[in-house]
Amino acid sequence: MKTHNIIELRHLTDSSFVVRMERNNLVFQTGQFITLGLNGNIDRREYSVYSGEQDEFLEVLVREVEGGKVSGKLKQLKPGDQLTVDGPFGFFKFNPKTFDKQKFLFIATGTGISPFHSFIRTHSDMDYQLIHGVRYTEEAYDHSDFDEQRIVLCTSGDSGGKFNGRVTDFLYSQRIDLDMNCFLCGNSEMIYEVFDMLTGKGIPVSNIYSEVYF
Image (tube, rainbow, N blue to C red; front, side):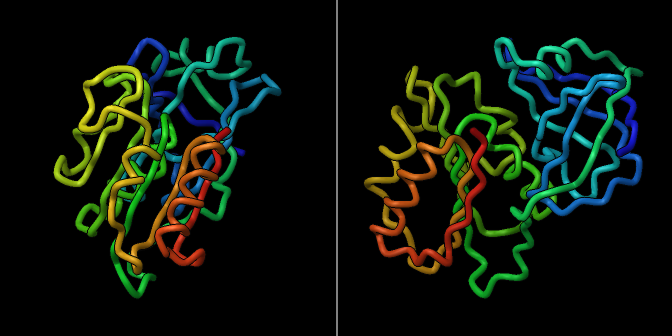
């Protein structure tokens, strides 16, 4: 477990923000997560790494949870404050060169976009499509970091996205190549529904990878 100094907090919405901290030579593979806590506090929380493998800094995307023991405190951090970081952990590792067919479909809800942001920052030239489901357009976290031709924003609470409705509604009518490698990250309900939908379309179970956020 190491201590990392805060560089900055970047607020994306009223309740979501990116914590940027010194990297301190932490080595991770994109898709892994770390645990964060305030110095002297026993409460800790897991966050997927949001930054890329080559970035000089370390970032996580945080959504403030009402009554949460960690997220609210993270929101109050200022440059120079310190966090204790442990990790990296997890098996949601990603390297496109290890796949025979290098075609990728990334499906996320909410802050489940975090590992995919890291994927793209690390492997910007790969063949991918990202489908991101949120309630409101303002939750399109850093979509400008992605190729706009490769990302579909699905909004269920307003009509500001490319598709008005849930991720599953969008996927229902889409044809997906059977050799596509599919990565799912977000709430468990979405993952179960999308898993069933993908296998129903003929995608082999061996081509589906998932990380449950909540």
